[in-house]
Length: 344
Image (cartoon, rainbow, N blue to C red; front, side):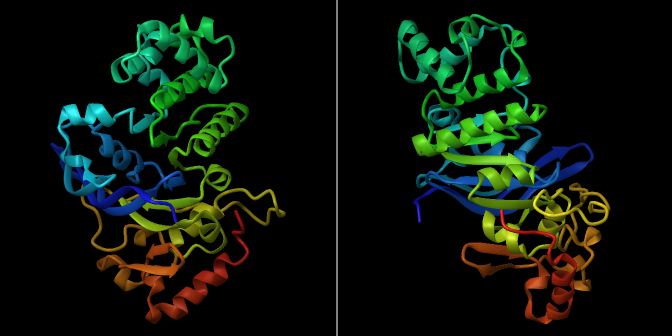
């Protein structure tokens, strides 16, 4: 097993608003290992982006606030870092690719200036050497005519090109961890494939750990080695992609997988969907956050938060169905989803 690069311990993040306290992330714990590809999946509003942005102080404060926990990077709790300490690790150690490059890039600055900025400030390169290095970066991420692109502004580039520029900026300082937040949003399938190929190649060639945030199970199957499933600000299941695709233990994970069209078998009946809406995080439920939408919820699910249980090697689930006393309900759960999911 690879060494632990990032160790998140009981992390909670909230937003203090006029309506009350929004508990966006609640007591989350997991690890990112050196060189691995880890996917975080879940519906919009489940806390994926808030959780990862809190790692490198990207959330506006106020209203955002770390309510508890630790984020240990190479033995140090970076949540305790000062602004100057964060500047040293942002980009150089942990880099972030946002889902919308048009709002992340400076519209008034040329592409070259934005790529070179980090090289000059962090690597102390002179501008000529930085420009030569930037050209190599642009080539590495598949940007044609990089000399011309460096002189252009963001609005002159397509969505796919802008996302490539964001990746070039993110990898410029060879970080040990790259966080990609929905990096293929609003891109056509061909460009999506190219962007994902670039990210996977960087992971394999440079040994860079990749934390991929997505709601697309197809991307998870093709990209990730391990996955975390988030719902209602909590991690409800985690484990190797192969194990979760072939035998997920949480009803939410199974429901997500069952809602994806399958090309390896004939479609039978209508595509399934999850009835209901995510919980109101101003007043999160006392029990399992998925209980009101779950077909297999029991009385305890609404009042008691399930404990985390290990159901296989590196496979953890927070669900009352894992309790021995719920064997009958679990058998019904397995029979309903039998054959709906398969190997990744």
